[in-house]
Length: 410
Image (cartoon, rainbow, N blue to C red; front, side, top):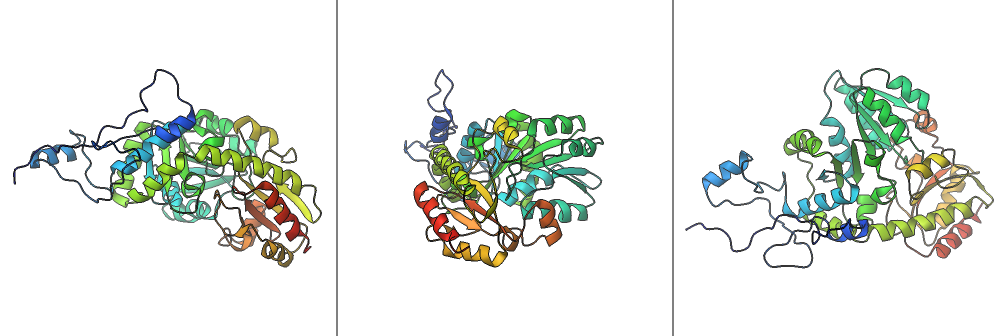
């Protein structure tokens, strides 16, 4: 069969209409990285193929030598995934991005691509369980030292970063107690120690916090959370400089294979279109709920960064545009009573996810952080009386009514 150039081709990704003004993030969320085939489709195309063909053996060889731009294999890169990566990078203000199958794939790859035996990692001590396991169990097994520092202890950060360090990993706000790390101050210290600063920005989302503008080098997400935000698809993303993505992340991920599927990338693309509106609405509801909960009996503490009672309230307001869509509640009651409150909820679901359009509540000590010894949970401030509430898009009045009604069991 005679080979020829195809009559329709995948156009190079473009900035939306190439306007001569700076686009608003909401416009970028809808049109950033948009690339259409020759059919001129309005919605982004889903390329559900594993491989790609070439017009000649010479073209294939040139593509593998990186002398010609051509998709090779969907584990390496895929047109739909590329659109998602470019749109998210534009929204984040990053030079480049790499999308992964899950958030933990993004977390692991973002760190693992930089370290080797003998290296040193410094991290905030308050973090999600799987991140904790990667940093304190898996990496030390490879001969990598991990030092943990309390999020708000700037003197502790200074001490930990007084010696050469390869990576600093920050989760801010932290899951589930919403602890805040001073990203700019820690980044300044880290860079003097020779470290690359990676920020897990899941709890804030690209809408509420811009770690790269605060001095961080890399941002990672579980895109399963706010970016999909509707309980449908798993995903993750790593964002940073073009050099970091091309020369550190891609050589690692190309051979270890944590790539995002094209279908999930398409779902995420469509979700980005409504990300800002969803997060801003959820954030406003969360603040109102947090303020209400502080006035109710049976509650020992409410942890939400934009409450004046939060110990890092001013820091949170200086580096975030909103307090987030998640809060932690510590009840003045034992675990069995906490479970009774959760079981009495009629609108809010019991689930270990967050950032969803549906409001979800979980008991971290027995679910998301169960893997950690009780003494480690206690060091993180997680008690059997603590729950995490992820606020969705329901009427805030209904959510408050549901919470008040459930609290009556106390």
